[in-house]
Image (cartoon, rainbow, N blue to C red; front, side):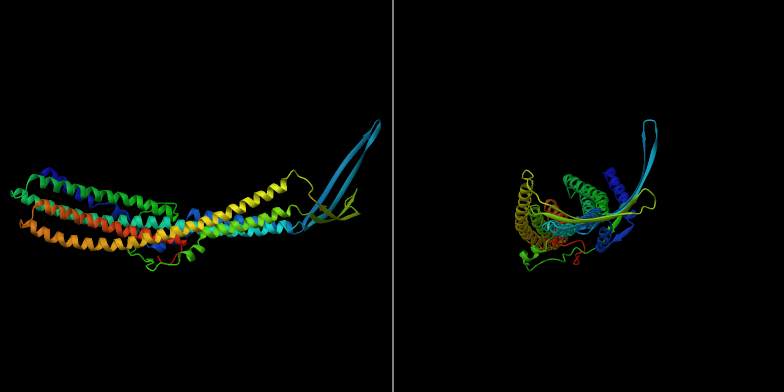
Length: 427
């Protein structure tokens, strides 16, 4: 018995020098975390670069609508020799400028540019969708760290309860008022509480690592977060789900992709049209520098497709198939988003009400515990009845914490289902 008590005291002393309290260096609000993630998260940076690529692709396509002008400069020398005669050397110099201009291609290039414009919109919506996912991941990590911090406080309370229970039962056992089984159970309960406290302090390091990743930090620094456990976006009045879906980034991205496919189909049909382009050039040439001879040219070129083994028909069929696919993808995504929103809203309301229920249950068990402790000390109830009430109190504390954390998580899922980005203002 004395050895066990000594071990308990040693554990409690070690608990007092927790690395959690010794090395926590900064405390962050939710907005602090959002600012860092918006600036440093690699997924957001990659999404921005994708937008830049789409913009560059449009400029590349549109460049063929403008004159294509080239300048040239040539200088050469040659030697010709025949039998029994000395060779002769000839020099040649020329410089000039030439250009071509697309005049008509059945609006193929224009439709390609319009398709690129829709691709830019799609990449912008992809950035928004990426931002919604980054927000969810960041909020989840934030909630996990907040829960880990609160769990330490709750488990400290449980350790205190179990320690007081152990001391009370020890006195009653030594006085001959309680059996050995009750004492061993109290010892086990205290040992379990101390283990759960140590586990909670270890888990907080993992939660801090997750926060570091989701904020896009390159180096790990121990941190704490601060926020109330209150759900801000409760959505007690059910919103118009159909209206929310219309602006969802994943749906808007599919709409832009569908629009791009429509312009690509028009471009494929334009392959059957003649292509007309003009050309012009002027240069000077001669055998000495600076050359004096003048040359110039003007021309028109007309190209008409006649037969290419069904290439253009296959391109039209391919473009039409892609358009049909994206139309169905849009319809499927819209239906799926409405269902996801309904499910997220229902889960949020359930989670909020669960918090209220668990809060009332915790208040009831705390009051019952106070009464039961006094009754047990005076012998009005047995150990078996009293320990059940104490176990219910411990479970109620954990359940209330889990309910609050779950409510925050379901709120984050609801915000994600609505398609809100990282900068969503409510929390």
